[in-house]
Each structure stands twice: as structure tokens, then as C-alpha cells.
Length: 142
Image (cartoon, rainbow, N blue to C red; front, side):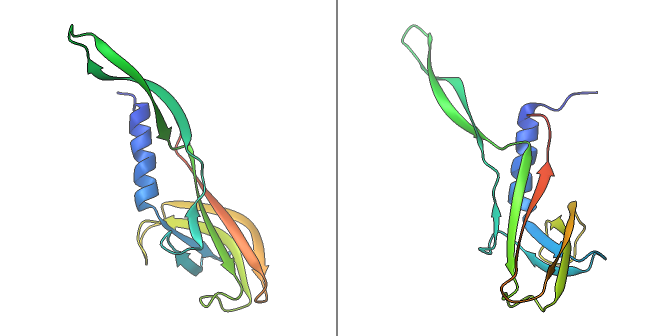
């Protein structure tokens, strides 16, 4: 059996950021309340990239010797974080609502859940209430 390389894990992380972009908030019974993507200003990837310096060959001199240079490469962390912020005044929310779980999808409607995370239930009762959820997706080997 072959081991997956660090580059393969980076590719998986990039695939997740590009394609697993819909976050849905649900109640304790799993009923959907709202599903949004980073196309909406209330949703953003909030993880920080990791900067790594790497020596690369940029050219060769006339004798065929490599000319190295150091470049900074940004890598995705092992825990990707998608954040959603919802307010009681948002038009999609009918009050009162109790939020208890976040679920990640790769489609805007229906689809199979790709990642689920429960949290302490939060009851949104009025227009001034606000919930911020950061959904953590762990892709190890960093």
C-alpha cells in the first residue's frame, strides 16, 4: 500500500476550499435553516495559510550549474475553517429559531453532507441576535 504525499494532502485541501463551499445551519433535528456559500458576504474561509520558504532552481549558468533562489510558498493548514454569520434581521430567517449544527455541502440545494459539526444550541429570538459559526474541516498530514 502506498502512502499519500504531503502534496496530495495540499491538493485535497485546495479541492475542499474550491468545491465544498456551501455551509448550512440546522436545528437539533437536522432541519435546514439556511444554506449559503462564500459568494455571500456572510460566509468566508477564515483559516490562515502557512508560509514556507523553499529553495528552487530558477536557471542554470553557462557551465550547467543550477542557480538557486528561495521562494515563499503558501500552504493550506490541516484544519480548514469556513465561517458563517447570521443575524435575526436576515430575510431568510423566521424567528424564533434554534441553531445546533453546521453542515458542509458541495451543492447549493439537496446533496449529501460532506462534513457535520454540532455545537451548543443557540436560540435566535429577535432581530438583534447574531450567531457566528466556524466549521472546522480537518485534513491531516501537515
